[in-house]
Image (cartoon, rainbow, N blue to C red; front, side, top):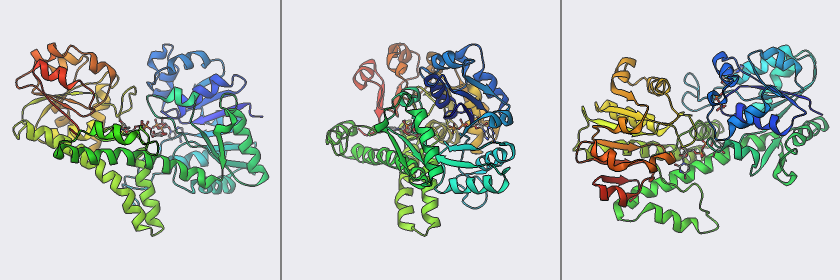
Length: 462
Ligand code: UDX
Ligand code: ADP
């Protein structure tokens, strides 16, 4: 039976996942480690409002389990040594250099973890891949562990994370399914069972699927590719709706009632973001190409091409609607996170829309309930489109929406935060330049209400 778990990586996946395991398994000691001292300090902050990942409900779980059987630490070696089971939840960004640049996953952090585990471990361990990884990564990890280890036994499991940010806690508490892939050998099956037993503390057994390692790894990429494909499909229709006079919300509702299609993930938007969709599809494309499956690769790549187009056309529409120039005009962004109820901004559509508008010399003012100025500047600087000082001059970040929208020519809604619906839109209108435009990239606001106030309102797909 597992008594001690170590999780390497205290990010959006490792933090919430381990908090829930610790809450549901008080008999297991769970230690989450990270090299990033600032991040660990934030996880240990006495005020759980300051933990580094914003997820509804997470603060309460951390408050309950932290110090009891949930610990956050920078002492990676010690936690590895103590643990029977080690989760790897480090980041696997798309490579920015060399072979597979812009496509393949960068596995250097995973490899470093594997080498560290091999060096430190003095007793048998079960190593669980939690990060999304290309198919067959498990065998690479196993190779490193077996060749550089201290002669102890390692079992590698794949246990992909399916939580969505913003709903991580409820996704973890009642998952659609838990997937565990492992070796078909008796030792492999024993390791799988050890992990099944952990989840069985709160997940019913019929929702815990066990497969071989490669099916598990590939299922994660496939699930994200299918979900992203639905968003790109409805976004493709949104452009056609705009030309034909159809309304994409009505189309989505009509097709979603077909039980074979289903209603979820049909919300047209300014484009999907997040750390997973693009990365995982690029990864899939890269793997397909590696095997010479060019048609398969092209098919999935189109999901990304459509998404890039959707972001770009949103920015273009703002420019053309504002009389073909945004130079020197203030445009207020409501939202910067890639979706509501998270402070994560990775691959957020807002970054790309802002980048396009800044290139047209717009002045952007941002308000997001959970994202800080420092992060917004980091996101823009990462693109390397212009100098850091030009980004800083082009963008201001406000601490309230009314200030952000004051004297603006237009408002662009980039994230679907609920609070945006409840603002005093009359007050916002009164303080804007006229005509006052709203570009709703999330089809969030009430067209009738805004038009009654006097706004020129444009949404996606109608
Ligand atoms: C995704 C998967 O859902 C999750 O299972 C996996 O573990 C990680 O990747 P996440 O990226 O956190 O989760 O959020 P998700 O809810 O999938 O949204 C991704 C993006 O798609 C967001 O930018 C969201 O706004 C957008 N989206 C989603 C739409 O534009 N329309 C939709 O109908 C649904
Ligand atoms: P995810 O969304 O996959 O959780 P994050 O970037 O939020 O990704 O979190 C990954 C975390 O993993 C980061 O906090 C990073 O510092 C940490 N990390 C990366 N490599 C290592 C390592 N070798 N040892 C410990 N922590 C690591």
